[in-house]
Image (cartoon, rainbow, N blue to C red):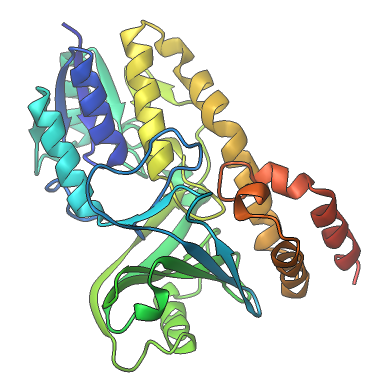
Amino acid sequence: MTKIAVIGGGPAGLTAAIEGAKKGFEVDLFEQYKIGDHIRCAEGFFDTLNVLGEPKAGVRFKTEALDFKVKNTHSFATKNEVNLWMIDRKEWQIALGEEAKALGAVIHEESPVSRSKFQELTEQYDWIIDASGGPSVTSKALGWQSFYKETSGLTVQYTMLGDFSKYRGKIFAAILDGYPGYYWVFPKADNEANVGLIVFEETDVNLWHLLEDVIQIEQLDTGYERTRKLGGICPVVMPEQLVHGKSLLTGDAAGLVSALHGGGIDNACISARIAIDCIANGEVDQYDARVRETLGTKLEGEKQFADVAYTVNPTVLEAVFKVMTRSGKSIGDYGFLTGRAAKFLSMPVIRTVLHSLSKK
């Protein structure tokens, strides 16, 4: 029987455990904490390629609209065109863990994988699914962990209590003035929301101070309580290799976070499915190519759009969004939240606006 060691109990690791158990593999999953703990995520579940469907647990609502602010706020309907749910990720991951165990996978909680432990796993198991995030356990064991620091976005976030009823059924995001990134208010209920920001390059600016500025701008500084503080990196660049010996990098460990919106749950789950499928078919040598074929165009298109959105003059970006809202097209037609950001950039009207205004 094929023996699989999964490192990490997040979306990629739990998906790998479930899919591996379904294939009849002997699966051991090693999670540094407890399943569902230490989650660093705004908890928006994108299904941009429309292959995963609604999460089986933890759903708070399917988004009806996205409000995006440059100078002014532009609203886009999403309910029927964009597969985006707000979830309680802890609840969702606990449910995935229970599913994995019911299928026969063994989950070892509070079991971090050190460099020495990683070497033991390579000797004891046929394959390792590295879903440990960034820097990955594989990179630490092999000495290239600095790659993640050099290529990742940086994020900070509070979970806050207060009156968030005006955000009911939608999510809100806004360009960070002067920085390549954005901030967000993602409601989990009328009285709770995740409020945070992401910057897609290394900076000396204190991001917590910047987040406090955001909280004041959005008038969340009075009558609101901070209940949870978290931060971390978002790996947005794929390493040159996704297979290192017996180890297959998945999810954040594989740099599969969107450089546009910082989401990566869908990519993590998809990469885990591909990894297990490649192992089952004796095609691990094809894993790297299959991940890039499946997700590469989407991620590159999102990066191209991010390069425009986060570097162009805000006046230009404001004009682009005005064109979008006045065109009568749906957010699905534009495609920048449905895995087709490159299509958005190629639209003649968008190219014309960017070209003409970039000269001003």
